[in-house]
Image (cartoon, helix red, strand yellow):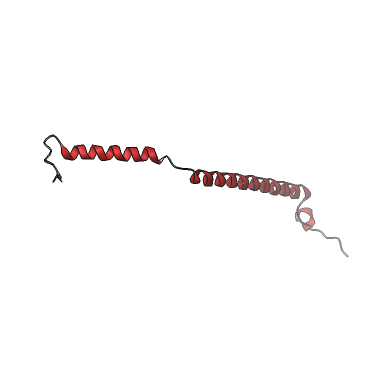
Length: 90
């Protein structure tokens, strides 16, 4: 069989070992980074689920709504107790 003469790197026999090793190194780093990001996603998701299941601070919200309602009632009544623009009291 005649010798194989090729202008391709490594005589057309795959990647040059240095390039192959570089590629394998990048692949391993990418897989490690992917695994790390997946772990972070799982932790963040678990934390979100826990926070969502905890009671909300509804009592402060209710207090604010009551205060807002009282302010609106005061605006309706006005000084004379009859009619304030846009509102009619019975």
